[in-house]
Image 1 (tube, helix red, strand yellow):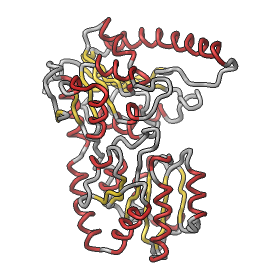
Image 2 (spheres, rainbow, N blue to C red):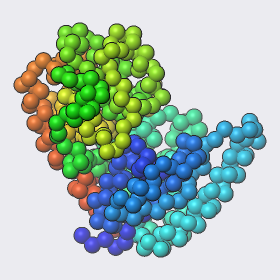
Image 3 (cartoon, one colour):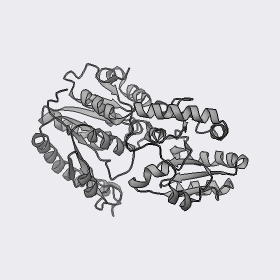
Image 4 (cartoon, helix red, strand yellow):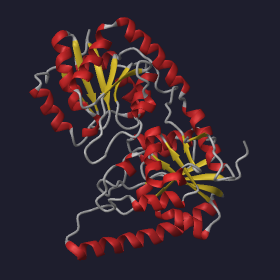
Length: 417
């Protein structure tokens, strides 16, 4: 395939930042053969300080990363409340956008980009109009789901997102769930320019391995059947109900342990749930782990569990990359049925899909995989096959094809249909 120009990918969330979208953009660039140039921040939006590890990441990868200070204004508490505080923020945001606009327009020319891909709809949607006004580049928006399903007090009808998606030349969605959300927002206008690229997995990195002895000793997992979760600890991930379900599992099988890998704002609630369920001694909170140790922590598990659920405000899982990562390491998974996880997990094939709000269903799935060896082995075999078919190399090829299709109204890749 001949690419008329490079793709400039604008990504607010990008390694060393953790998260699903960061993994997606890293792998699209990694497998693009140098045809994707990434623009990412070097300052953390969490604390406004330099991001730890960005230089090491950028030196390690084989693609081009351009680090700007910020791609959006950092949301900090202001000493003035009310209208004065809002005016101060708007003034700061305007100055940042003017500077960023000039830089992005220069980068398009310097990098000879023919396509600009917006990685974060809400944070960067304003640049779509910028590029259409001052350049001939085509614009693509990557949509993960929660950015248009979660309630936004500043845009309750999602009109800002709607305008941006209508203005874009192409829309890429990561799941059929996200496709449905885009269609609900745009109506028939979505069908002519929306394409589906389900998320992938780096099968060269995530692969089956024995349980590392030092980690087994660290977490006291000798001779244990281990359920494992790897995720940011948020309410929508459903780890609280997984802990409640695990209490029923360990009552029948005292050899079981539950390893929870990750940190997040819901961690204290999860520790409380473990104590209330009487399994505090059987649930291990590993905290954050390094990228180098991530695969080894997946491989400590025998079954991966993340019974995700949709929250009252619409926040939910857009796809669930961790399911494919676990599959690629040889683990059957237990997934929630809400959001886009059904695109990642086929019930009875690479895992079991349950109602994430039902402790009964979660417990039954966990017990089934613990007690039925034939079911476990069959799902494990199919999990490896499904993960192998989702390799990122093919996803990157789809991405480049969609970005460079000269006709924005002709379906490209897997049409969202």
